[in-house]
View 1 (cartoon, rainbow, N blue to C red):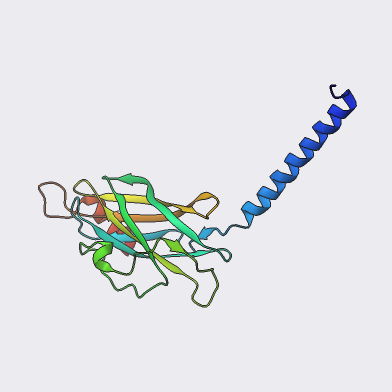
View 2: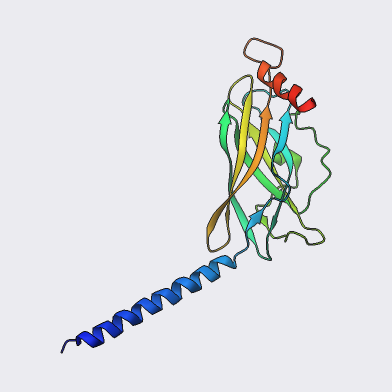
Length: 195
């Protein structure tokens, strides 16, 4: 025996209510997951003064932390746009920001630098030891200027995959093909930074 029109309407309304409650609950649950943030990173500039093509350099000192207690895992880091084949070839996290004494103009890898083996961030912003440090291993494929503009950090909350875009400018300067002097574009950037 089939359902009456009235019973069909009651079932339909009940299904809509259950779906609405489930969607609202999912949004609340999603909003409770910690988000990755990078305090004070907007407009960060990093220079490698004389880089060579297909040579690794390490750029340190990007603060990252969580907006609430939790744990996220960074799964990918890349430049939003690039010039001269600039790219992120590796990344790693260490528990707290260290003294930034390393010279990014010397070829290096994260493996040689040490301490950046982690991928997870558990520190909450504003805690006594609030930040973790994200370091990048970068390369360029062409002579002359290599430039990575803005950083896209993909991370996993355990439930969702999210992205954080950080305003950042990584400049890999170096001589043009057949030249020993730094490219004109790099010289212009360095002059503007000094002024």
